[in-house]
Length: 251
Image 1 (cartoon, one colour):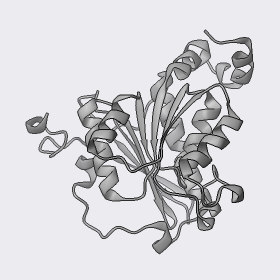
Image 2 (cartoon, one colour):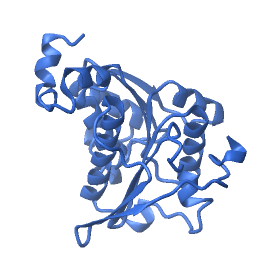
Image 3 (cartoon, one colour):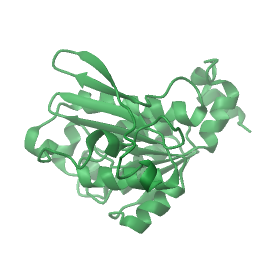
């Protein structure tokens, strides 16, 4: 049940007929894994905590650097040099002490990643490298858990939802394969802060829709964000029956 304090705290979203008390209860019972607590993971963690998602698992092996603070808003100047997981836990606890926070401050190997994915209801890929994205996708396909994937660099962003519970949903590998371009990071190519805030906020929204059961998740669609021209474009994405991760031969 929701306490009187919870009914008051979440009253503005409970007022929405698409959420209501039942949806808020589903959020309270929900569990989410956030992989990466940088520019994307920061707004994701803040908004999921603020919305009352009952259990957040936070995974990041890095420490807070001064150069992060231009965009990684869950951290601050006082936490430079600290583990990003510890920094985020402190901030989220101050924001909402009623939720449960589980930290993963070390790099996740195949086994620990599989365990972390199995322990939650939805996974949010907020990392910044292709190999981790591929590993997270494979773990989500194997466990049958929906994956909300976001990316942002320079002045461009992308967002999609991959849900292996649906027969019509592609996976991350269907879309990107093994990758064809050399990886670029924000430290090499740059990124504007509000762009990662925008993409991360949309990731949080998609996770809330999946957990509370409202709206139409971004499954089978890739949202492209052009921050320079403030334009959004949507592409349809189909499942690849020959996909090396989710194809019938590998099911």
